[in-house]
Image (tube, rainbow, N blue to C red; front, side, top):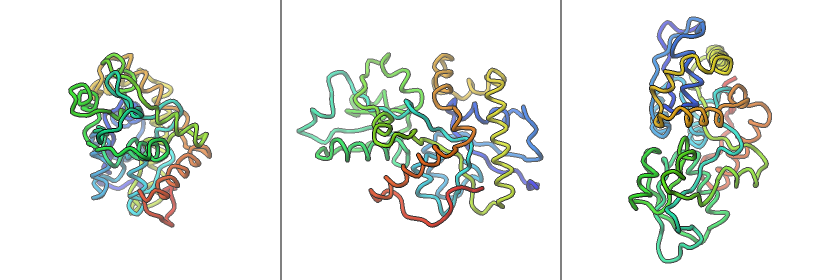
Amino acid sequence: MPSVSPYTLAYSSCPNDTFIFKAIAKKLIDVKGFGFDIAIDDVEALNQQAVHLAFDVTKLSFAALGTLLDRYALLRCGSALGKGCGPLVVSRPGSRLEDVTQKKPVIAVPGMGTTAYHLFRFFMADQFSDIEVTILPMSFEKIMPAVLDRTADFGLIIHEGRFVYASMNLEMRADLGQWWEDKTELPIPLGCIAIRRDIDQAVACDIQSLIRTSVDHAFANPETGFDYILAHAQEMDTAVIRQHIDLYVNDFTRDLGETGEQAVTAFFSYARKTGIIPETDLPLFAC
């Protein structure tokens, strides 16, 4: 049975997350007796807060989950995986990674704990192992302006950035999602929903089922509660918001399935080989 006290639920302001959770947040579905205190923040902020077990149920980068498996377990729904949806490396016109020879270029990244940054490290080790770079972490919406004002030489962009970088006179230098797909033939695991390991497993499974119901409601009623998505989106253009949802919300969001589980396992294997995340014998999934 659900606890009398509300559970804390945290996710990002990105349209894929607010799309997934709008039915719970706006009580468009029967929440089965659960109460949730909802927090919305940047995914890297959530990654950092999860170190301190700030929330019972939280959005995390898969990269962050890999370092927090002693505290959080993965839910099978709510994840962002897919093909053609990975982070991009962008620059001002004329700047290319392969031309960097004299200095350590500054790369603006959306946080050191993000899946995007881990993929960037995998990619650089594979393609440009002789190039040293300076990493400049910042909130994702500040990355393209930082490249434009020359605070950074290159930017690692995520979320809505892939739809608007060209209109800001930036050029793509690498598609890390495509690189991953070429290497593994698997979708790229970007973000997930995780739950504290100290929560009763039966409750965890009930919460997982409720989130899946919220996803199903969103798929069946995409326009219902769209005001909630608009209220939190960084990019207010509705066409961009719909592109974002279409790209990041898919069948893997409802259930990772066998292919999704293989993708997550492959990502963690890469990360462990490079020493980014520790080995663990704990089960990956909460239920």
